[in-house]
Structures are given as structure tokens and as C-alpha cells.
Length: 253
Figure (cartoon, rainbow, N blue to C red):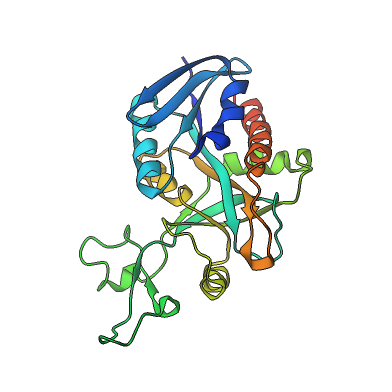
């Protein structure tokens, strides 16, 4: 039996269309996570609803790897824009995903307030001791996409007609950022194109367990250019990811 491909999404609107397209799908619930197991072009594929946030994404990824031993994982869904040049419905292929949820704040006395623009990023994977005091950890944690999955995503760029398909950096944390200056810091310092709450944490677990991984996100809103939220973007992303999945299967059998 060939090892399955896993496609993840956090919310129902991010997985429902993909799950419906599986042939012979069966549904399984483990804890709060949902798995639809079926086939695409006679190859086993699992669509997984991870639920929102870094803890859910990491746990769901560890679970699906331990239980089903996937050949590769694609994490996809909606995101908020960091790049003013991107519009709602544009898609970002994540050449890398970074954690923007780990920082050491700078010393400030009582009454001096807080300034996240001064916080120093921490790579919690780079230090065995105190990450806050280890110079090797004074960077953002970065997880690079698998080249074969990237090739499949690049191959089908032209099939997407709802917006642009670009390559960029996906920022992951449990924060929903609406501060333009903070978003600009991430975009300028780390090159971020969009932010969401799952990709980097899932990518970290996949890397630790040696499973090829790719993140793909559609902009559902972009506060940097007043792009209003549109939930229908989730379905548009699923359409594109479906093409990526089929291209990956066709080129890797």
C-alpha cells in the first residue's frame, strides 16, 4: 500500500471542498481532529482538519504522521496579508514558514510600557538551554519547503485565475496582528508575505519527523491595503491546492 499524501486545513471552510473531492472517502475523528481518507487518481490521500492555532497544528501533524506515515504534507488555507502589493485572492506558495510567536522583550521598568517593535526574535529549535540567553537562538525559526512539492506548485500556477500566485514567506503565530507598524516590521525584517496560525508549527513537526512539507495560503484579507475579509477565498485556495496535489502525484509515482 503506498504511503498517503496529507492535505491539512484548520477550519471546515478550508477542507470541505477537498474532502468532498476524494473518491471513496471515509471520515474518522480522533479527539477534536477530523480525517477524511480516500483516493485521488487511485492514490491514497488524507484530508485533515487540524483546528486553529499552533498547538492544534503541531499536535494534529504529529498524530497524522504517527498514525498514517504520510509521504508528504501540504498545509493550506487562508491568511492575512503582510505585503501591500498582494490583494485578496492572491495565493502565496510558502518557500519557507517562520515562527513570529517567540520573542524576548527588551528590559523596561514599571510604567515604561511595552514596544513589540523592539522585541528580539527567538528560535526555540536552536538552543538546548535558555533560548533567551543563547546567541545562537537570536533569530527567527525558519522551516524551508520541500523542493518536489514546490515544483508541483510552480507547475500549476497558470491554472489559478482568481488572483496572482507568488512565492514568499509565511508567518505563523497565535497572534492576529492589526498593527501596521508591527506587520511592516515582519515584512521588512523577515520578508513575510502573509500571516496565519498553523504553517510553521506543522512544518516544524514534519521536519523533525522527516516528512516533506509545503505551505500554501490564500489572502482572505490584507489590512495593509484595506483588502476586506472574504471567506470565499478558502474555496479558491482549495481549487488551486487540488491542482498542486494532482501535479505532485503525476510527477512522483
